[in-house]
Picture 1: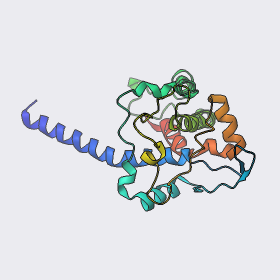
Picture 2 (picture 1 turned 120 degrees about the vertical axis):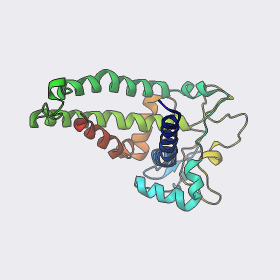
Picture 3 (picture 1 turned 135 degrees about the horizontal axis):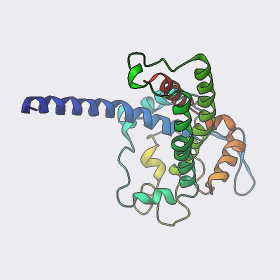
Picture 4 (picture 1 turned 180 degrees about the vertical axis):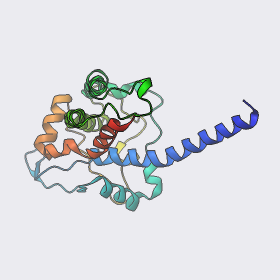
Length: 246
C-alpha cells in the first residue's frame, strides 16, 4: 500500500469519526436527558409530610427534548458531559442496582436474543450469497417480529433504569460520584442545568433510588410505567432492521 493510499484511508477514517462525533454525541446526550427527566404524576410529599406540587419541565417526546436543549443551552449544550470521569471511573458501577441492570441487559442480548435471532433468521450460506434474503419467509419474519417486541419490553426498561441509576449520586460510598463529589458541589449544574431554567428535572437527591427493584417500583409508582419505555423506537428500529442485514 502506497503512502497516498494510506493518507486517503486516514482522511476517510478521520472524516467519518468527526461526522459520527458531531451527530452521535448530541443524539445520545438528548436520549440520556429525556430518559433521566423526572416527571411525577401528581403532588409529592416532602420530608415533613407536606404537599409539594411538581414544578419541573414536562417533556413528552425525544424531539421535544432535542428542541429544549437547543433553546436553553445552544449547540454547546449538546456536548456537555461528553468527557468522562477519569480519576475513579469504576465508582460508577458501585451505584446500587446499576451493575445488576447492565448485566441483565448485556446477558439478555448476548446469551438469548442474538442466538435466537440467528436461529430464526440464519445467515445465507456461501451458495446463497447472490440471494441474501432467501432464508427469510413470512413465518420466520413473524416469529422474529415477536422476538423484537419481547426484546423491546425487556431492553428499553433496563436502559431507562440504568440511566436513572447512573446519574444519581452514589450514596453507598461517601465521597464518590460519577463526576467526583469532592470536587463538584452540584452535579446537576455541571451536566444538566441551564443558566435560568433547568433543562430537565431530577429526582430529589435526599431520596435516591436504593437499588434495582426500588428504582423500578418508584418509577412505576411515581411516574407511570410509560416512563420505562421512553424513546422505545430507538431500540425497535435497529432490532427490526437487523432482520434485513445479510
